[in-house]
Image (cartoon, rainbow, N blue to C red; front, side, top):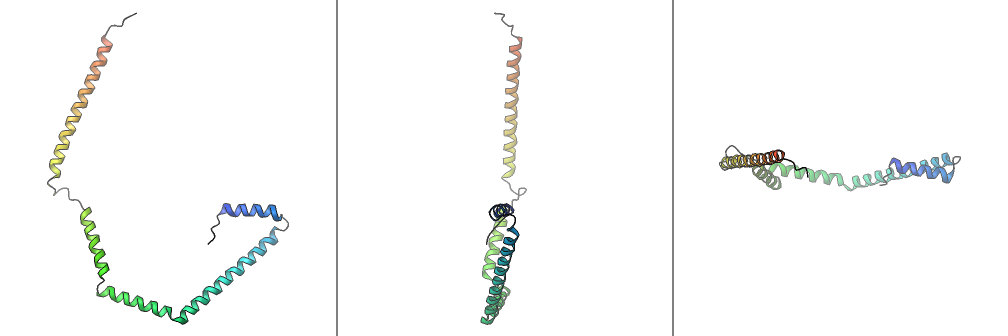
Length: 145
């Protein structure tokens, strides 16, 4: 219910030390401990009383009856389980790829290889043009003006 971390507890302790004082702080912690112990005891007693009332009302028997009924239904054949199994099978077949048996993949691979060769040739031509331009700049005589 209450989520207190170490930093929150440290801040609470420092504030308590400042407000209460170091002399009365152990007495305060004793009283807080007793209060928390009483609260836990009351919660435990309430929980056990609720469990006892549920046992008297037959909630466990009804729960066991429902469980046995659903177990029997699963053994006979659960239509919901059959539907989810068919959906799982359809999803598996949709995501399974067979690249070796696919005839459309091989022409695509050949087209890609051809396009890669064209790109490499164009890149090599551009690099050669750049090198030629740099060489031409170096060969030009510099004007001392």
